[in-house]
Amino acid sequence: LTLGALGPAGRAQVWRRVLSSAGLGGNTQLMQRLDPSKAIHREWLSKMKAFIFDIDGVVHVAGHAVPGSPEALAALNAAGKRVIYMTNNATVTPESIAATFEGFGAQAKPEQMMTSAIAAARYLKAQGLEGRKVYVIGMDSMAAELRLRAGVVTFGASEDANKGRPEVEAEFKSKPMDPPLEEVAAVVVGADYLVNYYKLARAANYLRQNPKCLFVATNPDPRAPLGKSAMIPAAGTLVQALATACGRQPTMMCGKPSKDLASYLLESEGLDPSTTCMVGDRTDTDIEFGRSVGMQTLWVESGSMTLDEVEAVGEGSQPHFVAPSIATLTSLLKQ
Image (cartoon, rainbow, N blue to C red):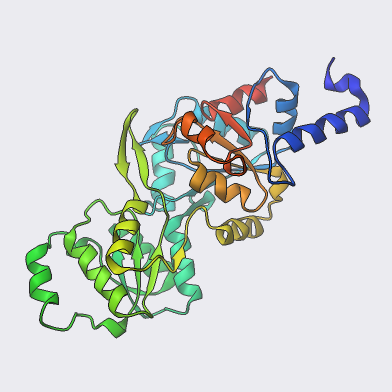
């Protein structure tokens, strides 16, 4: 029996069961493995009008394409689906992402990209911090985005990369900090491949000694994939280290899973959450991000979480669908 043979009423009933089992409109859901041989899953894909993709662990890992990802993205574009990218990686820019994609044969434009660094810049701008000093634990690329998009004056980043305990003793122990505590409006923390004791000490003092200084984190990810099996500490590791040192939690977490960011993205792009699918490799960032505003969600096994870890989280935090990788979407479109 095919869906076509059921008639309009029968197809509607089946489709309601699909949406119900996928958890739309309620807190319970039944996680399903996408199967190109199932008509219900092919019809689900036909209903989706837009896809928001995480990047690291979903489209590529350390600059190498996840097998089948360029073809999947091309197939979605050819099918008329909107494709947007949202990454918590604050070390990259829209232009560098597009260049990385081109390197492994995937086509994407900078205007399709949203990063956690851009989200942080928008938050600082909304707080009216233009012209104010902001200390950065992060890469120079993130500091540049903050200056460009928020108009703030950044310091830190690579400037402090070669400093350590001796500089902490010399600069902080017996004389006022420079710049003074009251002049630093925010500390922004993102992934930093040059992080050190000095940076954490300097940021912790600004935050602990000045309650008005905003503690802004780009994202909570504890780790990121590096190659087929290795992992590296991500921004969330640094955020928690700094929070422990200064005794404060972040004032704002700007990237996924921010519900405010998800709502902004839907509104700014004119997307309906019921026909938009968030695709990612983490339940605590990507999937929570999508579910917070009623999107469909797809988790893929090509990134930083295992299926066992996904199955261990609460049902309300699980994805609606799972797949080995986004290559499954190509197979669904071909059936």
